[in-house]
Length: 302
Image (cartoon, rainbow, N blue to C red; front, side, top):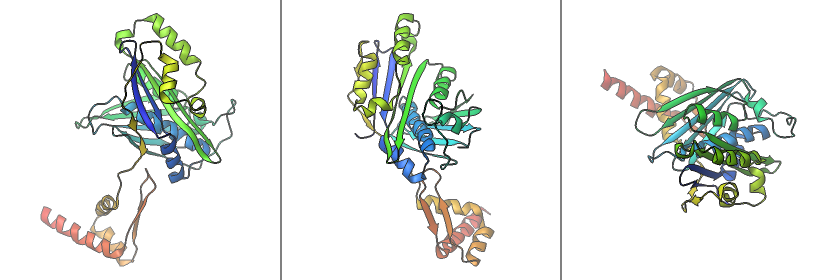
């Protein structure tokens, strides 16, 4: 099944639901970054969350950044998600592995750390990004982002995130975001029913592994509440816009002296993109061209 995102509403527009399947993009992240099991789960949940959070923004160039900085051995997660369906991200220590937790599951909370901060930046493309910071709740990522939505965006929400990975790779990954909008926020009966149903969810990936589709999962949850699933689905993918030209431009920031020193030592420059792991190299003749360009630019500014 292709990675995709679908949107729906229920209760006459009082409930917003967004579902995403992210199996392939999480597997690509695992492969690119050579992630351990627990690092795959942690980054995969955050990649999925990024796709879900950016989905309710409007402008084509909108994007969401999620940074998680805990006191666990993963030492940080960074994800960048865009409204066009492209997502990318990395963890600082991708090889960290931990024994399962007391429930026999991957111990994401310990790997991330239960003390630290969650940072979310929403950029609508207008030049004025909106940023929020909260303390981590559990390090399990879903709990932490649910708390962010309730406190920073003041929207009661439920967020289910899951990644199932074994020795063969990522078998299933995805998530579900459900939000209570102001028009039904005071309907205690409706909220009670939703809370009861959400409490019965044992995880998102078991439903995917049972071959349930996103519409079926959402139908099971709120199908009797005037559900309307929008017909358009959006494809999701792991994608990074880095390229060699950007790397070369960044090399100019080293300055004339540093570039000249690299040329004198016949040392080619190498840069690796943190987000996707792609490697770029510039041989000495290209460094000489860059140095000439930089000297001309500096002379024009003088």
